Amino acid sequence: LASGDLVRNPAARFSFVRQGDAALLLFVNGRCIPCEGMAALMAERICASGSLHVEPAMLTDPAVAALLLDLVNEGAIAVDQ
Image (cartoon, rainbow, N blue to C red; front, side, top):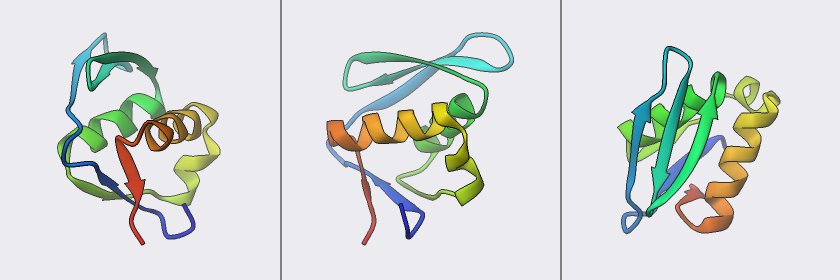
């Protein structure tokens, strides 16, 4: 993520359901991913836009980094070159 920009795969489907103030369930292509704290905020941002800029400070949160890595490995999001 050196560029800090991500794009959603247009074929991927994203949605979420809030679970209190700081948690949500992210659904990606039928798979459910529990997210809390900063990872929940990142999940909302991914759902809200086809592309987004990721601030380097967000990547210091292990849950955010793990979520983004999981979504990149799945092909649901990609690093915008």
